[in-house]
Length: 265
Image (cartoon, rainbow, N blue to C red; front, side, top):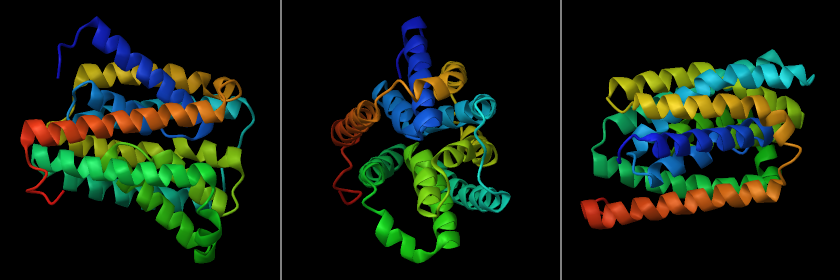
């Protein structure tokens, strides 16, 4: 990673602001934009994920305040408890797994997970999944959504919000209520994962602080910005970030580590 100077920290701040606005305002996912940007800037994926986790633990409170001030209400307590428990299980499992890997192996898993979440992201953006998934039933969908959202967050740094929103929408939860659920579900799961990554030595304090500052401002602006940003533009921006991060990861695996063949890619 490069020098932690003002240009770097400013870029991290802006990525946090934009990602937080798109996450809490449209449910597109903080990590789907912020984490790929950090990886492109040179961070180890686990450092990027750890910084994003800390930022979202803190900005969840301001996002909830912003949404409640606009009169939005969360889904039922039953739905929230199921999402909290299942997402905690997924994110802890994924974080422990990633923390035990070597640098090259973690980068390879991150690349595969990023490709998977990009595919799932496109499916949730078009609602092409909904008819088949509804057959599972509301409770299994909610449990699966929370677990996969948490696992995706730990492995790729993104996908939590889109998966949670999609699973709630398929289960019949109102769109705004599904968005309000995001800052209620995140804190416990993300704090646990952040502790795991920090314990493993992947926390960059200055990066996390800059990303957190940007995410707090973005979360406060989210309800207003959600009405101003065309959803197709937001999807395009996230898609570009995902593509850039995957290209950077493949580049590093090929030229820096030379391990694509060894790990089966």
